[in-house]
Length: 457
Image (cartoon, rainbow, N blue to C red; front, side, top):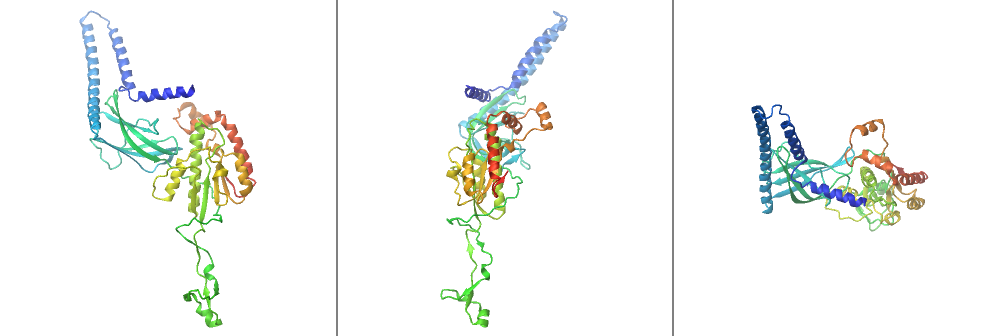
């Protein structure tokens, strides 16, 4: 019943986006009519010339307001009809592009560039937009900002919008809503445009504690790297000359002294010296259906730690191979790092692939686990490989910190926006899942303390 009510409320909100009049217009009409009736009752000398003049002035004043409103209405209707005709003739161009997004103040941001033409703006009015993404979600209504050095287009909507998004993941924009509004913002006519575009928000780069690890020697060395690593010290060694050796490597100085033919051992280039396999499990042993705290701040925090761990290993000079625990269609990206970044951003909590089915212990060098991983699964893995593999345990509850006195004062007087981490703090305190997750965290943390390599974050 609760879900049905939520769907009904969502449908009503979506339908309200297409209503051609705004709330300002309704307030204006009601308040004007009440004011007109009240002023008519204030005539102190009825049936006199003063009363007639006063009534006439009221009629003139309200007729002027009606004329002003009518002009605003006409400007919107003309612009709306012209655009509708162009759209039906398939002469409207809609382009949506994105540039590198990041995380600011705990929320993902995406810079969106939009170009729609031809668009004839209402006289002294506005053209506002709204994006429909992931089929059912709507962005807030917004106006585009013209970039520095860019001239405003007279017959087009062109500019950028810094879009605050609810989480780190891949987004699909299906449609753009255009709102033609008059200068009084009383009327708002809506047109829908198809505009298919996909992009993903990216985890923030944050400072992390230094991670000391190294590649593991594996039985199957079938992964080569582009940059070959020299094996230190081998070029100083010598061996006796054999028939298949290159005569150019004979050390003639030694032959002159000892009459022995020896050759230098050539430098060995090992294509597997810096290879490192990194795993990050998104498996959860808990029922997290409908839990926004787990789906939003916990998942974003986990992705951020994974990405920064990957960057730290790359900076240490390792050839890092990130192995995901879920299948996905990865788009063509310029380099390996962006491919890994996309894979991390697009990952979701899953129930299908536990640790035992995901990790190859003989190859794994770094394994990230979270508070949602099953304790028994972690214990089995740690018992066998706790001293060989670097396990990084991410305590998800640490991403929802308690309030200090300043937060409580702000909570009393400031309304928090939707998807704010401050809102999630309250939800997490009241969640039935909280006690079970924190108990699981405590058990895993105590388990990891028995081994030398694990890292707790």
